[in-house]
Image 1 (spheres, rainbow, N blue to C red):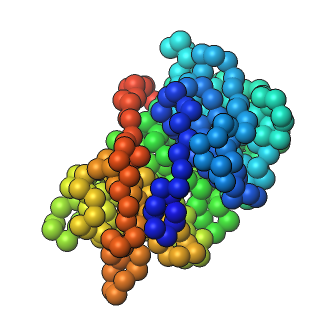
Image 2 (tube, helix red, strand yellow):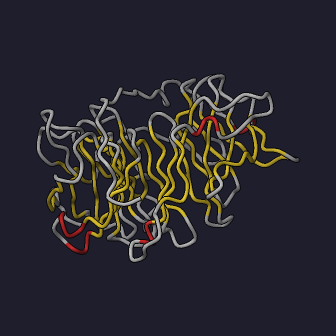
Length: 330
């Protein structure tokens, strides 16, 4: 889609399963990567919509990916799998520069259920965070090689981890949003100290903020660190499509603004465009909306809106219940 008009520019229709993540290369705006439950990660030339993938990365045929990311140097790919045969789940690594499949290996001991999120550090190419429905959020230093040595710390969300986001001025903090709307903020830069890692934790973040009508949030959409503002943005929503922008800190959540009259049902994803101070949101109502500053509050840029049928339908799958382990450090 065009960033300004939201006009559909092109489509790729090769994956045979739901997508788990999309990301552009950091060093080239023309290279797009996609991960899918069909067991492949593919790269695409964004200048040539509709063409075959530039590269296809695979691992074991039993692997179905439910998370994927690319490191900040564009050299390393990682995907997290669903639980395989009711036993193991894997972090799979590839060298993105290899012309073949580039498979480097797997980590298999750190999670025991679906790995719902893998997130590379924005500045450290070897630092990786992963979250799982087993309730654990792990941080690795991949430069150490073997899994046992690479695992730096395990934090416990006490619930199924949904999304993980690096945050803080030096990106030393991790925010985890769980599938049951829990919120957990840790400072993993304190590993060499005796200070507790937990900055803030709440098992039900929907109750932290009172909205104008006296009610609360129905769900959390996701989070993003805003480097220019030095603030951690959390987006929450109501079942009627209303969106609410909140700031997360050691004191919890603070309501910044509410966006109403756009979506008509649950919003599933968002992207903050810092350069244009614009918010793009996608919902189950099949709408892709662009919000820009206008007057005293953000308004929907209706003149820029194009609705693309079926382009934003999202297939969600229930995750299994799990007996959560205790975290290694709090």
